[in-house]
Each structure stands twice: as C-alpha cells, then as structure tokens.
Image (cartoon, rainbow, N blue to C red; front, side, top):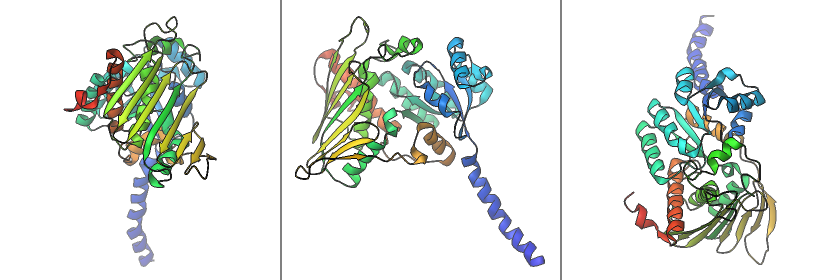
Length: 375
C-alpha cells in the first residue's frame, strides 16, 4: 500500500503538468470583432457559432442598426455590441481582435490595441497606403504583438499545392512568369451591402479601387512564391471603365512586376464577367494553373502534356484564419518566413501597391530603389 501511494505521488505531478500544458488548447480564444461594415464579417459571424475554439466576446460597431441586424441574423446577443473599440476592449478584455472595419481604420485599431498587448488580424490589405503601414508595423514590433492579414486565397488548397510543386518537388523548374486574374463584375453588381460600398468605393478609406481591393492578392501570393524577394521595378495602368458607377476610384488595374529572372502580371478588376481568383505559375519546363481553391492543371514537361488534378484541402490546424490565430496566441505557433499572413510578407505587399499607385499616377515605371532603398 505504501509503494502504491509513493508511485501515485511521483506520477501525479506529471499528469497535472500535462493537463496544465493542454489547457490553452482547450479553452477558446477570446476574440473581439472590430467593425462590421466589411462584407467579409460573415466569416467570423458563422465561425463563432461552430467548433468552440473561439469565443466572440464583443463587437465594436458604432452603426447600431447594422450591428443589431447582423447579430440577430447569426443569433448573437445584442448585449455584445459596443459603440466603440475602447468600450468593447475595456468591457471584454479580448486576447485578440479581428478587424472588419474600413481599411483606413486599421491604423487606429493597431494604435489602440498594440500597446495593450492585443494581437490583431485585419482583412486584406494591411493598410490603405505605405505611410499607414509603416506606422502599424512599427507599433506591432514595439509592443511585440502579432499583426496578421487575412486573404481568402490563403486557405486555398490549390495554392499550397502549387507552392509545393514549385519549391518542394521542383516539378516545373525555376519560376519564369506568374499571372493572376482577380476580381469580379463589381461591388455594386454583386450586391455588396451599402455600408461596405460606402467606404469600398472611397479613395481615402479604401486606398483606391480595384488596384487595392484585388491587386493585393497577386502581390501577396507573389511575395510568398518568391520567398520575400522584391521586384526591381513596378509598372501599373489603372482605368475607370465604369465611371458612372465608380466615379472616384479605379475599377481596373494591371500591375507588372519585374524580377531579375521572372515577370509577374496582376490583372485586378471590377469588370470581370465572373468571380475569379486564379493563378498561373510558369517554370522553365512546365506550369501550374490554379483555377480556383481546388481545381488545378499541371504540366511538368510539354512532351507529357498537362493533367487535371484536385488539391487536397489544407489540414485542419491550418484551414482558416481563426484557427491559425488561436494557434499563434495560445500555442506560440510560428509561421514560415514570408507566409501569406505574416507582417514581413504584407510589408512588401504594401510597398508594391504603393509603387503601383505612383506608377499609374505618374504614367511611368517605378524602380524599387527609388522608393525603398533606405526602408
């Protein structure tokens, strides 16, 4: 009997330790939602009702009618709605916030949350311009918080498969050309809600039109594929093909990024006849076409011809923004260098968009070292 008690006393701390280690994984991540005007807010409204790994502790939205409409739609209590970010944070003490306000308001979100040690995930792009982005990056680094950017394409199994075929398996040779088609028929045409349209079509609060709205996808994926290499030059042409509908911003943009050994073409538009986010990666011997999140065409060598494949979904632990956010905050998960959500990737994205805007305005090619040699 004495031996059994001794053994129990010896092993009990081990079990207690394991229980304590697993506790962060079991408890939900406390997330505050900052703003509800972004059409992508439905992602977290749906996600907060499933899985149990995140808990929405509050909504900061001054438009009470909008907040009550959306919380009622998804079955959240109206008592979770606060009139400001400050009120929501003070009342709920979130571990992280997810921003679904205007892109212009991302800076204010970081200014308030970073000094309080609150981690932040914003909807793409990171900021309205490079000036805002620099201040946000500085605050995140100073206060040692995570500042992540969420893109729909970050969770495409096809993009992950393309990266593996190019870099891990080396199936198509070194990258020589990448082409992106991103956009839709237009935010009015697809029925974006009025609260979203109000700032999405505003050059100050959105930072531009289709250039920023959809050009960021190609810039983000390119920076990932190129492992953080920056382009030598950027050329951009913007147009207003529907000035009666979008009088204040561009609705069509073509961005050309020149690298020492490759060229990237990003076609971002509110004038496509369909919703599109695809990617074509050409190597020295073959290509990978990502038609959507799963469907792909792959050609390793011309003599063998192309084959159609379907990418596997991402593993459960990497299958969405809020799962990732919980892993980072609760499990100290570390992202790979220049991963699509990282600050180092999205720093370059903002520099590319900034150079593209200047190129379009000045009607000339912008060289990287002109703008960022000292950054």
